[in-house]
Amino acid sequence: MKIQVDDNTGKRLDVFLSTQLPELSRARIQSLLKSGDILVNGQKAKAKNSTQVGDSILVNIPEPKSDTAEPEDIPIEVIYEDEDLIAINKTSGLVVHPAAGNATGTLVNALLHHCEGKLAGIAGVERPGIVHRLDKDTSGCIVVAKTDNAHVDIVQQFKDRTTKKQYLAVVNGVPNKDKDSIFTQIGRHPVNRLKMAVVNPGSGKPAITDYTNLGTDDASNSSLIHCDLHTGRTHQIRVHMLYLGCPILGDPIYAKPNRQKAQPGRLMLHARCLSITHPRSGKRLTFHAPLPAAFLPWTDRFLHGVGED
Image (tube, rainbow, N blue to C red; front, side):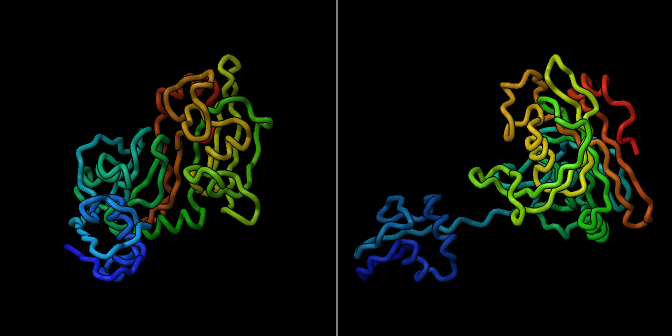
């Protein structure tokens, strides 16, 4: 559409357009300006620019894109499956659900193909079946709901902390204590908003991780750590290991992998075991994700039946 400026209002461009296009929010107008879908006198303009008499404004509103995830034939490793749920051993590098920058090639796309679209829809079209998540570079157990009833039940289990989540991590260095419980508040990093951090009491959310050092390899200055999670905060183990002064090997956000002696080529965090109560039968289920090859130099030496319950 074309809009002609007839009054010398001197208003900011985004403010002027919000009066001319009341069906669009100011944020939407600003987004259209940034994308070049609004031109003033044939040129891109900024929201803060002032309007002038005689300005010719051309507004293009693109057709909305569907947010519905589509099935894709992506290989996945199924640990368990029935009519209510499916448990997957997620590979490192696989994003769980579509989001900005990852519209396709996700676990959700793979599951829609595998389950022939039979996933719980209560979480929305972008995240069908998703009840919890793993970071892109974390591997291991993740459970997905195939029905809405299962979704509601399992989400409540995570909320009530009746699930059991056990991880293995290989960290740089050696924790001061062989075994301990870390109880902190975790929130957004005050400077880098892409990171999480341990924050002062009264801010953030409580995060509890029990850990045990299963063994240390002196040659690579690295340790194999078993973690029991009592909460599920974003990047919780990664932040807590950094808090101990032992960032996880290969962590591109909380460490400097190129300065670490051991170079496994991935984030060394694996969701080894996950226990839930079946939403229909009430039976307790424990899923075990096989160990990735990158972990074997440490697990072959130090893992002796820990966390198998």
